[in-house]
Amino acid sequence: MKVILDNGHGRDTAGKRSPDGRLREYAYAREMARKIAQDLKRQGIDVSLLVPEDTDVPLKERVERANRIYAETGKQAILVSIHVNAAGNGSTWFSARGWSVFVDPAASQDSERLATSIAEAAGNIGLTVRMETGGRNYWVSSLYICKHTNCPAVLTENLFQDNREDVDYLLSDAGKQAIVRLHVKGIIDYLNSL
Ligand SMILES: [Zn+2]
Image (cartoon, rainbow, N blue to C red):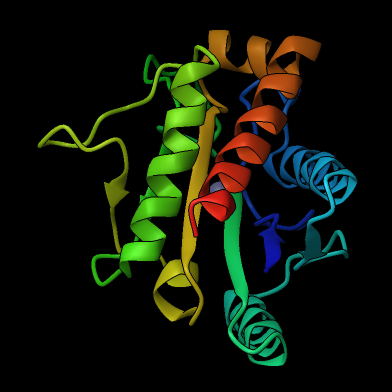
């Protein structure tokens, strides 16, 4: 099984930063994706970084890349898209905070199980997992990358880039380790359950 890591936006995507400029989503997601890839590879898991370049690769192209990999692996791939949430457009601080994971409304059971597994890992690491109405630990929303990729796909929103406490934590060594560990643990638990 190949794990496809999507690191989201590019250097030239508008907004997508903390109001004080310390955290930029494209850079943070890339740093996390590289570290997650390293850890997974160390455990013998095949990983592909969907966007090795720093520029903004349009969603359509990202989906095409993912679907090509899924076809090439004989449908033996999953996708995790890594993001940092925002309550606004990056111009001011907000109070919303916490961790969440999303699947498409038409998601496969595998997508839902992958989301559940990563959310459980996030909770076990001590992060506040934002709960969807109905008590699910994953959120259902129509997001392009999850909707149009053929493989099981989830999108993680790793705390808020416009919440001061979240940004302080995200930029700390402990915070970075937690974000990496929850993805690695959640993905491996899911793979072991297949
Ligand atoms: Zn994002």
